[in-house]
Image (cartoon, rainbow, N blue to C red; front, side, top):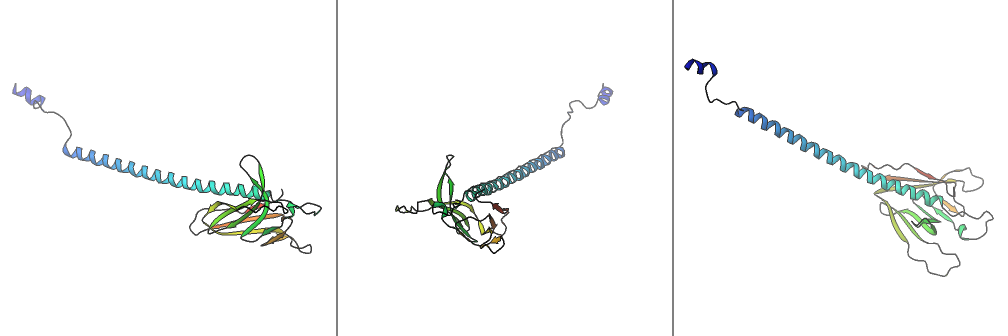
Length: 207
């Protein structure tokens, strides 16, 4: 009987995990939880950065499309040089452009308006008022201002054409006259550290 017990091992002994093995399991699980937490945080940070970047890009794209539409719709001077609403002078400077053009209403139509594009306190702003006939005696309403892009450090406008018949065409920093220039270039610069980029926007008015 005693020999049988010796051969088969002590009765009642059960197999299980030792304290050291349990500590190893706990440490491994803790490392996995920490790794997963860090991964989730990194993923959320990357997602937030991507959303901010997407929002900035969307703002720039929408503003570029709007500017292209407005500059393309600058009122053309009549070919015979007769007086009229289209002969209003376009007044272009390096930091501001004033002209008469067609403003989209958002309903698939446009309306003639006196439009100003300028930099106001690090904001690219579009100002406009309904265009009144030169013979109209109605008082002009206050301009409506719309912020296009914020955080703009500088605005540089240039106009392609000749200021006089005896001069060759070139980029001009100013433009005044009844006729629009052949090309208008819009160049924006942002503050240092701003990752946004604005490729030069070059538009042919009356295209």
